[in-house]
Image: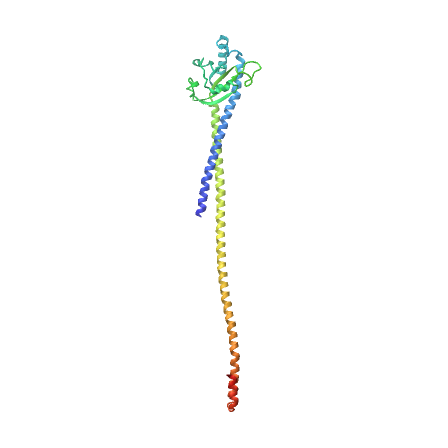
Length: 298
């Protein structure tokens, strides 16, 4: 009984730890997938909207001749269109030398950020979306933003060129407020956590019930085997006692047979002696005959 309780407690503890680890890993993977879905949506939908606005306003040479009044006017028009989206908090336009050529923050104009690896990826034609905390060097004027989706969009304005197949003319970086999307993201995380925990609880309860039921059956079988062993032991003892009694009876029977044979062997000579003595007694008057019978007896 104590062994069964120990095994059951061990299983309960180990299965609880295993189910908990699996549940935590599942929640972590699902949260990461949700995060990646959010960033993938930004890389496609938001980036495509920005490219359409850029293509409708900017000229292919604006990133090269950025200081001309015409280029500045088109940059300003692009900012006006892009910032009409209330979720966009900041816009930066970079030339191929990683220099800020235009921004809604004037203090950024002319700044370069050669250590920005996401910008380097965008200049190679890759659209990059990341969730960022405002702590890097390029975030000097964005400290008030708590957490944003940072999107780097490579721009190719020359006809017949697409990102990834030709030189990039420039990069548009936008900081986007993810609060609306995060509201759905948080709701999905709560749903995932709740469902995962309920599933883990159901799995643990089911496993514990199955093992406990199996343990009870094993205990009942062990008790039944113990009872059968006791019955067999008692039967064996009774059989041994019966065999012992049988051996005693056989010995007594043998002694009886020997006694009977001995008595029979003694009884025959005595009968002869008795008969001779009787005849001798009847013939006492004839001495010679008596002596003859006595010699026969001796």
